[in-house]
Image (cartoon, rainbow, N blue to C red; front, side, top):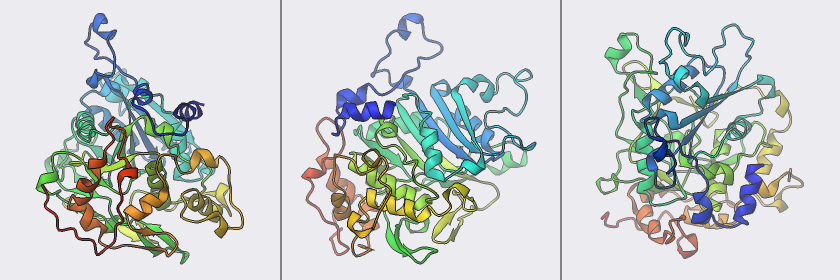
Length: 447
């Protein structure tokens, strides 16, 4: 398929500017002349398309979320939404994610009427569901070469800010890094009270935006529900605050990636595909797997300058959520049953840990090696560099503390971005000789 072809073209090396330039489609303005439509190219920034992937579990809010994505976009006709909906479509209460509130014959101006051709829905029988990584794999199979790719959390009760597409493209360009991924946890946003009282749907009302941004900077080995020590980066340990005054003009480097929100060039979908052979792994395993694999393929993670995607909360106060079995509850389908994964969960976690070098092959008697070249570490950076730079000791099952101090202050950003490759194809970690430890001095000037 296209992923194998793309990987063959890269020849197991870092992407080149020439190869990355061929990834990405363009859609001209509907008002442009035929002459101008023939001039599409990489310099037509406003014509670049965006692929948006969502997961739903038969949720009635799904069509409202899709509507909100289009209604809030500056250029909605350049947005394409793919949804994997785990549902029984024969249920009389089921509302398809692409169904408008009223018939298009009555109101043809609804977003789901105007842009219905830009929405793809894959309905999956719940009996066939083997977990989020499999669902994300299906969603990304619907990628059709869009210039940018955006992934949102598993709960479709999500709101987006006005002109989110323009803002995110501007933030991406501000990194001056073709391999940048802008990623964070979804913050809370509320429907403005007077609009909520008027009965409006969040698909077409404004939202209150927090200036804070969540920086993904903490991971530690914790005991899970089965009393096994595993590396987790829990929501409550990340830093939710305003950025330093000197770091508000552009996204700031951070160590980790989140499945709740990710915005990148489209080649990320091709270069780091989701592993469909993992059964019933949770959000924590998914995110750490993708963090480590993306890092080894040359991608860099940035926290946004401000939030553009939010968990929608109604009422006067926000819901901070709760912790269940060591994993934040609120954006994952914790009650899901995976009948096809019976007896495979542990094997899947072993596979994930070996592929990401969290465990050595010598430590396990056997493991599933299916497509290990495709779903393992990349060729650009070594995982031991990640573990060293960010204070993870995989053999001792401990992490250095106070990494967040180093990240949130902007010192990590200042220390590393100076090693950006001259062609803008990511940070060259071969030039970085750095090992984080919790006693490191972080008292540097933030100029």
